[in-house]
Length: 400
Image 1 (cartoon, one colour):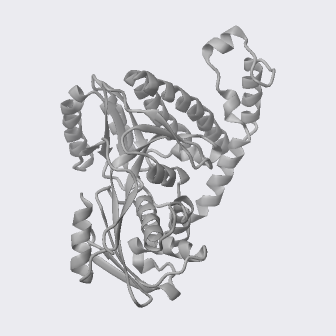
Image 2 (cartoon, rainbow, N blue to C red):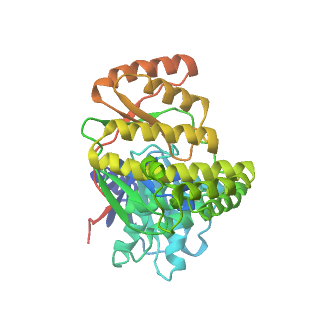
Image 3 (cartoon, rainbow, N blue to C red):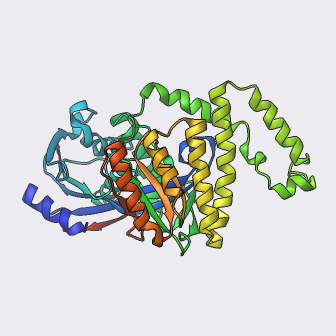
């Protein structure tokens, strides 16, 4: 989808061309996203699909929103902006505007058009892409330097306070800072993307849609889940990461203790935790190690090793975090049974959504056959997106 499409639709809707068109990509995570608040880095990619936001200024204080993808229009005012259940998708850009107003940025009314080609509400950060693109558009429209409206904080405010969603800092950071295609690492709170490298040349990354919508976040579970993750961070998972060689040789860790002693101490502490916290902390410790090993696999171009780590993470997500579902488990198992498939894992919040499958291109026809089997068993007709290079988050001033 080109920005010319959104410009044309915006002009037809409002009888004036947009002054600004901004774009932000969706995001896929291969590791780490469910426990990022425990300090686990994510292994992620910005997608070659995303969201365009076109904006033109008004002379009054009205805010008008148009979503061609839904064929819907919403409206409110700068002075009366607040979340409303009936506004649904429009609550997301409203939340970004409200964040900008709360930071002292003054503005009049706006005509806004939002459209994209990243699947909506499927765990690929479509709402976050709206937030990032909206923040970029406002900066340009208000003649502010890049970064004046913090896209990460704006997305957090919009998704949590206006849309009732569980925000992901990694989603917003990767969408706003990463180039689509290459693998990157994001560490919670860092506001810095660490480029790793491209997907191994022998592989392609497919995003297979299970057609099961992810379960809505339970607002009551926000605080409880975050408390568990922050408690797991206190276990200091970085100290648990050790190679078999280090353990076998009795090498010491940075604090001066034997690696096996440190592991035993961690095991003792884990045994004292309630079951849910213990399972979550085990996943945290395992995922930290997997991210480091996966980084090495990407740098070496080792698709087999990267795929194994992705599949192990899926198993942990199901067994320890209980965030998988029968449909995703079936897809993960039966894609990995195919010769030439390196690994599969759910991506996004879980309990539905997409499966990220790392595979050789030679195996794609066999995957297509398995998806036909999936349709017969579960009744869902599905397909995939191939991750490729694309455009990073950017903004264009289109009219003076």
